[in-house]
Amino acid sequence: MQGFVTQNDDYEGGTVSLLEVTGGMMEGERVVMGARAKEGLAAWWHARETQKIAEGPFRERESLTEFVTGRARYLRHWPYAYLRLVEAGVKAEVSPLPGGGVLGGSNLAIASRSGLATESRAFVDYLTRADNQRQLFSCGGYAPVVEAAYERVDPCQMQREDGPAPPSATRTQLARLLGAVHLALGSAKRPSLVHYAQFSETLRECVRAVMDDDHTSGADFADAVERALAGALPDAVGGRPGAEDGCR
Image 1 (cartoon, rainbow, N blue to C red):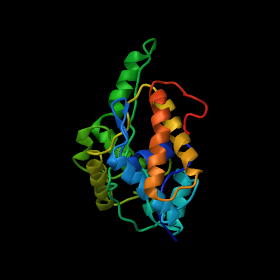
Image 2: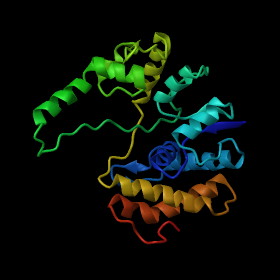
Image 3: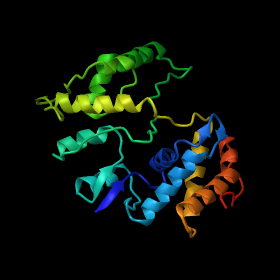
Image 4: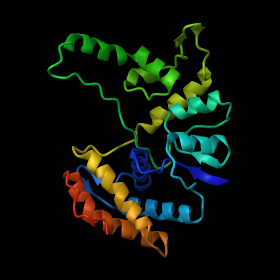
């Protein structure tokens, strides 16, 4: 049995895991590899070497399966996963990540040339109402995006063709999850960059390149990652792919 499983495949989930390991690495648009980041990378390398982290590649479904089947004791996942665990009858506790998490957001936009701007705005207003945000949370596990939605828990009231859907989690379970999500929001962060997609791809590419090399210690690995990112990430932040071998 492995100790910990997370999303580590070559996609955005892998970027999130790396940002959580390092604590972010960014101050505005400036790359900062401070002591917190290097300590996190060193600990991550050591955990991999001692097989305390389950080797993937894992995405959301695969990492959840690893945990449900008992091949990992701890799971890093998005809030909705807790509801899936409850539905599967898996007993699990939930808490914010010790070092802080990385959370995205909900983006609702109306095209400037839309011929349905009024109707679209009404739909956006409807979705962001506190009562509907509570239902999105209780039924689907989506983190509420309005503060008022955290004031109380409303159990899922989703309707099916044959009647109301049975609740997937109790009020107590939902309240525990909602509290953990709300607490985590205080430290959850993701770089706000115009060229975030390029940054994300380059970050994963550089760390994978360094992982393929041999290292004598976690500190050695962290130093190698720092050197690789110093040469490639500034270009990525500016929207430039950089040199073909920029991660070396």
